[in-house]
Amino acid sequence: MNNLVSSKSDIDYIPLVTPKLFSLDNVNYMMSKRKIAGIIIMGANDTSYEDKEIPNVYSPDRSCPYDDYGLYVNNSKYQKCKRITWNPYGSGMLYKSFNFPIFRLYMDSDIQKLKQCYLKHNMATSNGELVYPLCAVQMGDFMFSPSNTEICMRRNIAGSLTSGGFCDPLGDSNVWSTLYPLNSPLKERELIIVAAQLDSISQFYNFAPGVDNDASGFITLLSAAHALGKAKNLNMITKPKKPIMFAFFQGESWDYIGSSRMVYDMERGVFPADSKNWPANITLDKIGYFLELRQVGLEDQRSLWAHFDPSSGDKSRNDALFAALLKAGTSASVNISRAPSDLPLPPASVQRFLRRDSGLSGLVLTDHKENFTNTYYNSHYDSLNQVMGKISSQGLDNSDSLSKRLTKLATSVARTLYLLASDSSSTADISKITADENTTSELLHCFLQNASCSLFQQVVSSSNAKSLPSSAYPRMVGVAQSPNQVTNLTNHLMVYFTGSQLPDVTKQSNCKSNSTDNHVYTYLWFQGQDFQNVCYRATVYYSPAVSPAFILQDYNSKDYSTWAESRWQSIDLKVFLVANPSLEIGIFFGGLGVLILSFIVVRILSW
Image 1 (spheres, helix red, strand yellow):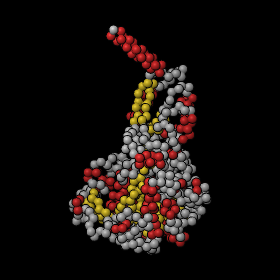
Image 2 (image 1 turned 90 degrees about the horizontal axis):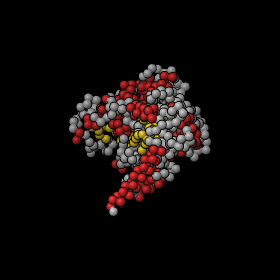
Image 3 (image 1 turned 45 degrees about the horizontal axis):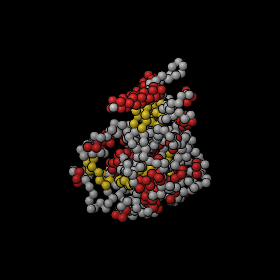
Image 4 (image 1 turned 60 degrees about the horizontal axis):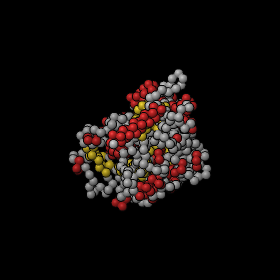
């Protein structure tokens, strides 16, 4: 790299770098020399090409993630992470603007072609000179969007003669459900919500594994929902006094898009969207407890940590929430500690709820007491291999420990919810609620490794099963057009885990709502466990996960996320040889001379 930036040549370079060299300091250093026209990274993951060593810490996110839209934005004591820097490894590189493209190559064949081209044509002589022709690349990544969301969206409204638009709001759909139907109006502080983030983020769209960041949380929540659904359907538990609601938020990596929208809708009395036809309208004052699972794949001081906001919620309810979690954790052999009372909440969706209603009791469960235990937060290194390696370095269990530990935590979460909903101190019922390790292991495999797994095939139709890829679906949120595959699969899994099969319905055309449903049921036709096609009825729903800023057309909003994505032309990378500039100039003037001479000859002959 030093040879590149110290070169006296006027040529613009596109360095082919290993993942270990791709850091903000190195990129800034190369930019300062004004010799860089782009950067290509070789296999930027934990099994990178010819560079098995990866940084010990790497987070392109900010050191204080999402603070501008969280609970403490106007709090002089906690804003800007004054009390605790949650992500001390954050470089903020994810939000930097570079005036050149940055590509990642992950196919070994492509990397080999570039290396061979370089070694054959671009190796300097003993005198340090380059001999033409040289190997060159052209990186194509044209964006239609202008400088910011406000200009882009207003140009969208004005219309475009060429592209049909310039950008689109980021977003998707949230998935939410209730364990039992909400057939009657809710009482104040009666509802119990358990939530997790569904999306991930990194610098590369198709490689944002987010194993600890979000997958550990939502997979635990899915496993807990399966445990409660199984206990309910087998009549192992009685219906609790209070309703339980599961929420999976999309777009949280972009300043809480999904949770902000749900809060916005609840404030305006339009949650659910067709609440006029619902027996139970959900508003913020109906929420009593809010339990959120964030990064829970690792441990800190051999414990998970329960965080509360120092000034929100009723103290007795906060204590009751932690007591239930502690009791359930003890019953499932999960060590849970309470974070210091003077610490603010770490980045979490519940901040958006507390920002509008400080009366509810919110608890965020994480694998860190203070600084993030995850040193690869929101990066392409937050992968299954790295999380497993970190677990091993902590001296925990064997290679299957992640699924074992998440299963125990899922049992703890499910039992906590039932204790809170039952207002009961008895352990007789909660002992029957147990998460299944095979289910947790299959969820990890399906979401992180192979989407064509058996479980995913069971929850889709036979025609859709054929299109499931043998790799994991990306979980980085896209533009708000329709729910992505991860959202749909999460919805289907919740139907499968908490709903009930209708054995009398044998045709897809009959798998639909009827007049007695009171609008609270959804119906889904899929292959099922025996791949014979079944109809399930459940209380599982979608809700919009698009920032309210785009509804209000407030594109400079300080209250809501305003992230949008540019529309693109196709992205391509071309490799070719370039001749000596002197030779090119000679050919140009030679051709020009031939052209002039031909005009003279033609003119003479025409006389």
